[in-house]
Image 1 (cartoon, rainbow, N blue to C red):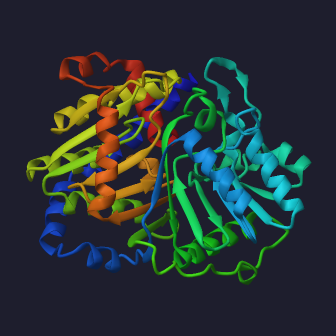
Image 2 (image 1 turned 135 degrees about the horizontal axis):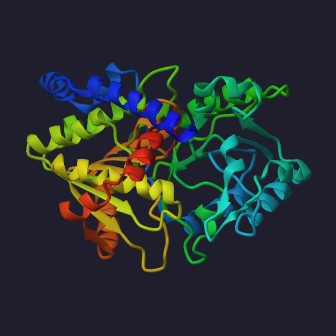
Image 3 (image 1 turned 135 degrees about the vertical axis):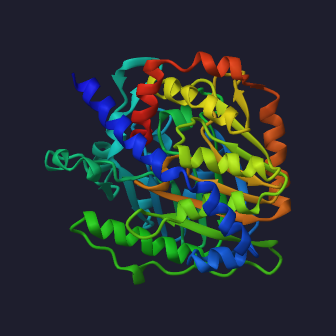
Length: 427
């Protein structure tokens, strides 16, 4: 009965989304006529641009874990961390213990962690819950706030419960910021043991951007904690050394109540791309409007390549994602399925247009990232960064296979449809 109600509600919402999406191509065509440059496009939408060092990009959970421990050891004043999922597990133990040690040495540490952390299951033993880290942080004395807690009162406001902080970013001393897809949890750092997830974190030296994110962090903290933080207590970092190679990026710090920055970012890629567009993420839960953006790019001559991942380890996610592959192929995209030789999940989120316009962060190409989730991305327009990412794509393609339309048809099951509709909001 409940499943039927959920399916009916999801189907009704999906129908509305389809009707609202029909004008997508016409809208993009009108925007294309006015598109003159990325600078003017983002400026018109109040999306800020900041100077920064060239990014250091980490492509696995264990690579980032090693670097994050180094950043914690070298911090001089404060560490601010926002993550979607945090749990207490042997793979995360070293991070929590080092944060505790640095606090005892006088470094200020504050964390924002989403309540979704309570719903972490061991992929190898689905009945085993991996403990959320909240109670452990209390024992260690590390201050944190729980973003939008799952409370009894919230059960009566479903859309409130869907408001999640999906961002993963670190701020070190107001100088270094890092953002991407890596959580401090078992699957990000420890599954499989050799790599954790295949993921990205992009690290830059960018004091002005750090100041903006500090303000965002403090505002959210003060919304959930009786212990209020003062923005002025977190000093700005030093400018980049003169010998450091510089670039710039647009900062996407999205929340549905403020502005549709993720949608603006998506549109920028489809307007800018002329030859090739790569889109990499673990799952495909696309609305008709998002699919039609891909169709628009293909119709103007862009080769659109989408890479998804095996080893989702959750039947509902895998069934939903594979159900949507046919829509991508029919829109004209080349779809590839990545199969890690060691069983790692490809979790990172990348959009790369013409080998130069690149978005790295927490944003998935789906409705949740467009609307209900807080998200963060760094958007670079730099061919040198593009080359690094294309080299990584080449490495991934060694273990990727094209998905044919015949194979995609096999995934169009009723159960797959049910999960596909539900994942529009939950995935």
